[in-house]
Image (tube, rainbow, N blue to C red; front, top):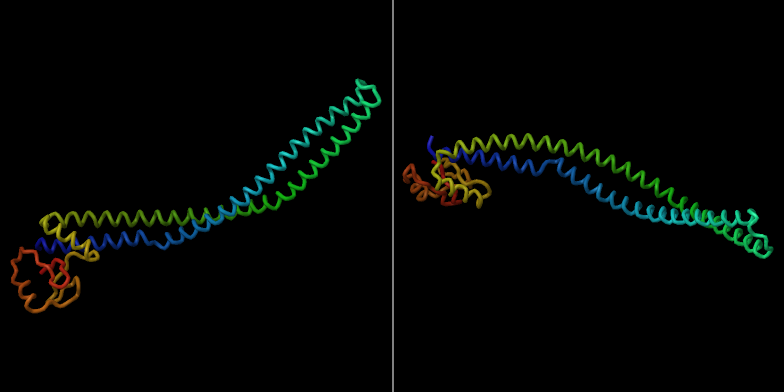
Length: 237
């Protein structure tokens, strides 16, 4: 086997490596995973919106409850002064009674408003729980798909490693200049830098070489690097 035959072996390994890398980048599961991530992003957007609205309502509810507690404490203080005997003046007692009435009324208003907000929060909390449940399902599906992807990638990477080892062994006997030409041509010509000459046809471009040029190819020294006059790939005779 000549070094040019070894070049075809290198080409076979390179082609297989390209195929494996293409397969790695285009697994069906990658598209499935991308679709699930898009669903998660949409769901997270809805969850953020509902969560923000719920947090706002609960914040307002908490402020009302805090204010109601403060008013209740003031009312309790006024109530204590009314009946602890420390105030005896009739006018002052009437003022305290009015203060207690107003404070109690204000407390009731605040508690009623807090209840209204609590009622508004309930459907939002339920919606948020549903979104969380839906997200958990989607995340579970994504985890499963990603496990399949990881397993497939590991298998493909092992195959790529085997092909690369074979390529390295085959390229050891090839003139570095020829290998450099091959690499450059492969980059320019869709992954095929060397091809067998089969009769009068180049297996790289699958075109017949005109007789005069074919004769020149065949008369070239066996150790000379010959290029297809049609596609410029290295011809292995």
